[in-house]
Length: 255
Image (cartoon, rainbow, N blue to C red; front, side, top):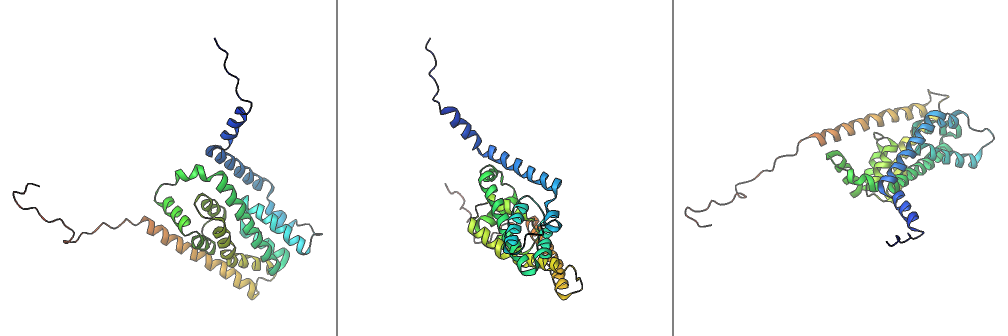
């Protein structure tokens, strides 16, 4: 008998790389990464470090930049943005705090979008079925900028969920990041101002920001209820007029 031909030295490495790059393998990597990030948030609570344990020796533009970087990583790891926005206002004031919070918002959205796009899109797109998922995917894919802008303006959808849903759709990077940067300004500014004015809760700035937060939340609830009601409504039955009806065939026709 002839001995089997030796395998090429690179065949094992090629097969391993293909297995690791398979859609399901990448999705498993994404799930493990997100679970690890969520566990670290629960164990170490980094929002407390940003809110109360910020190093006192860091100040100025370097501190704002460092906070923005930490903000972005924390939002990608599911730390709630309202807590970070309040911390930004309490630490840096309204103007610098808003700058750090917006920069961190865009950074965190970009991190989540990149992870979802390269690790989860290929495996999750075939699972986009059902009325709700199909409608959401079509809206994000065809009208990415205005859909994401509406999601950011009305804070009814969790930040992380919106990022990963957009990544699974066919939305591009530029519309996603631009809509995130513009649409996040009002709500982020309200929380940052509230954090900056937390020492004087009776001030007009604090009352205005708190009122804006409440009203935007109510508006988001109303919009979500209307969208849900619209999706549940049955599709109207097709109506046929007498002009559309086929003409009766004459008696004795051979057709």
